[in-house]
Image (cartoon, rainbow, N blue to C red):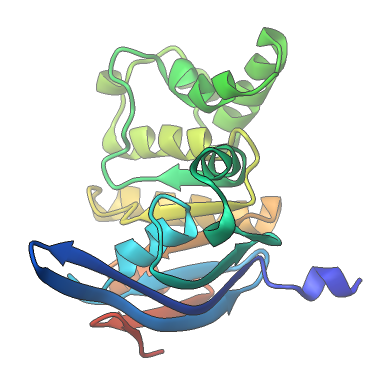
Length: 228
């Protein structure tokens, strides 16, 4: 029972900087915090505060300069590149502001993409994809191309793609930033349902206070420092 209380993400003394010519630009400084399983966390802060960098570090897209990032018991800062790529494929679902759907693929085929890296049979992949599209309310749109879907529907396809491989965490970078208020509300409600009904952990970067209000907790970054 004690394992259930362990954080799914534990960040300790995390720092990150980028080099621009001869200049070193600090982005994150000594960040430490934890995220509980099944939490819906919003990361907020002004442009350039480091929130997207922090999200990318948690997702294993980028590397930190120092510190630890432990996700579901794995210190991803210690993984080699190939190990990190394998971990990322099975452990993280990505939701982007502009959906990142392949325009020449149907909704079904877009959602199936992450499963192409698994050992699932064609029948098993189909079952997973149909379940994911049903979960986001698009079972009747699986043969449609992105151009035949609204922005909100495209984002729901992207969410189905993010959850189809049953990852430990979902990371969302401004997932409502390209949507009108009604569509944004639908997406936030869906993400909240994934937390409550499916036990997912969601980490969302947003600059929109209305979007952040849907989260269980909010962390604020200011010039690379965690202020709340």
